[in-house]
Image (tube, rainbow, N blue to C red; front, top):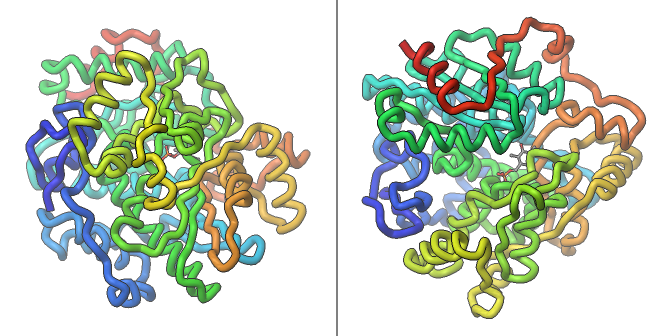
Length: 472
Ligand SMILES: *Cc1c(COP(=O)(O)O)cnc(C)c1O
């Protein structure tokens, strides 16, 4: 299996070569040359597999430069009951008839990002050992990504993490999760600024090619193909459980979305032949994606138009994985993708496919639908779900559930992906329900643990100097 760039001007590469890379050198995103096809007979064989074995089967179709026995061992080490809380790893929970939640948030940091990041940690450690190399991961986080990356990389050989975050802006629970880690290879840098300042610094360091090479700087952001690929697996697992429970032949998914990474994995699963009816993209007030699927216009927002909401992990100004889907939508026309995402976005901050016949195929051929949810919707959905089903959901999952209800179809089970647990967003749960969410036992009292964090001005040179001091 070889990987190509959505902009058409990068060498084709094998999996382990793109594993440690971010963007392709031409600014595009990597995708497999073709989507491997899974037949109905193979699907039936996979139906009863434990999650780690299912992951191995799916990943094997995309990775041919890791020996199968090693890949199997990596999958089995990653997806354990001990780490993810249940034998099923991603159990389905029924709400109404035909309406389910798929639990993706029972990993170490209580958000779905653990599903991919835990695998990435083990893949990185394996590949770096094989090459005899080291990697220093530099990232920016406003919450879920940073903690998922740190819990995945803690104690891993050959890897250090330098995670910047805006000082004082994450919830106390999120700060405690990250800053309480005492592992020597994990470094928390709280910068005196906002999230955009952190991101700008990460970009500036990554663009300093000498520094990047000398200090072996890498990233784990959501455009990493390995993360996306790991997410494909739970669409299969959700499909098997929903069809088992209902006898239906096809299943729809609703996905609380920000950077389009999670739902793009659903698109890949569907392209492989998984019988998915609809892929419903749910956004919050930051509705870049809902706008595209409603109108055909993709309009990147400025920071002044990017709202701070009560589902903060979906507060995005542009959807960094969206280019992958548009590449497929345009019949894999790389020159056109390069024009839209390169020239047109740079010139006018938007592009418009409304008049192009391909726009209609987003819904008709690729099964996409969308909707938007607001703070008031979120509160009402959290309250309604708790009152009627006794189930407490987080704010992002609430956005998903609100939008899912609009897209229900008779005879097609709808699976809403649960992207975080309510304890991470306790303030809004308190606002909706007048009480705090239950806290899983292992997080009792974490706010009181000693914190390991370096506070510093948002300054590129200071961040670089910190890295230099801690690499050798
Ligand atoms: C990251 C995140 C999302 C958005 O996922 P994308 O892959 O960026 O679309 C939604 N909910 C939660 C809780 C998240 O952490």
